[in-house]
Amino acid sequence: MAYMTGPLGSPMRAGPSVIDIGAATYGVLATVAAIYDREKTGKGQLITSALFETTVFLSVQHIAQAIIEGHPPLPMPSRGMGSRLGWGVYQLFETGDSRHVFIAITSNAHWERFCQELGLLDLLADPDLDTNLKRCENRPKIIPRIEAAAKGMTSAELVAKLETARVPYSPVNSPLDVLDDPQLQASGTLHDVTMADGRTVPIPGLPVSSDAFTPEPRYDPPALGQHTRALLTELGYPTSEIERLIDARVVRADGPTLTHKTDP
Image 1: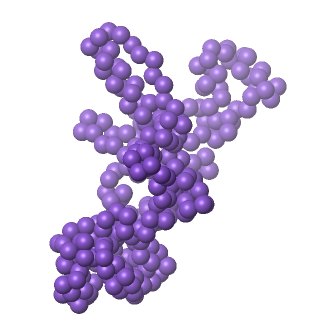
Image 2 (image 1 turned 30 degrees about the vertical axis):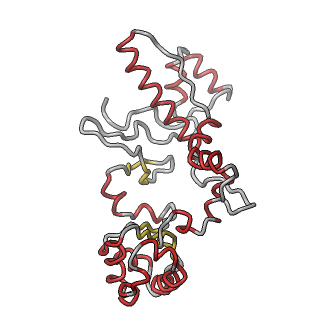
Image 3 (image 1 turned 120 degrees about the horizontal axis):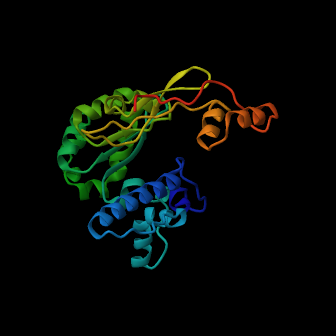
């Protein structure tokens, strides 16, 4: 995965913890499938989900390509962006406020609306660019014009035009920028969480929805030692022993007791 992510000769790990999250997700899927199977057969299963195998599975398209072609594929940054994917326009463009927006033109209808919205009417009228194959062959004629147009706008201005043109796009958001994304705001997956210092902050939750339940946090992040008494009580320690451990500084206990965020 690092090989495919970084430039050729410069492997780079993924920014998010995709392997940890992926292995856990596949483990949950397999567990649910095993429970469903148990309802039919009455037999349980031992489920294993592994980090290394998850990495391989997430890279399966690149591994398959390598096997079929007989040599390692080029890493993604070395593929000329859209050129290896078969699209005339399929890449990041820098805007005037030093941000980046990904634009994908994957149909003639996209191309027509895109050129009209960005005022690239001469490109639209060019017969050498009226099919995707021609646009791939004439990318040096197209890309600099789009780069210049993007540089003349802010990211927000370019995004507004792309939204009007109804073409696939995505601004490159920092972890703070994404909190203002309209899709995220409307999705209902941001949850208010109260930190140990009293601040309430929005934290993204599970990316699923249901008409029967709402995934949301059960607890706020604890302060150090906040739930010591409650947890030791659950483990069966008598109150006198808990207080002795606290007084002896074997364990630390501070703050309120463990409470649910919502009613059971």
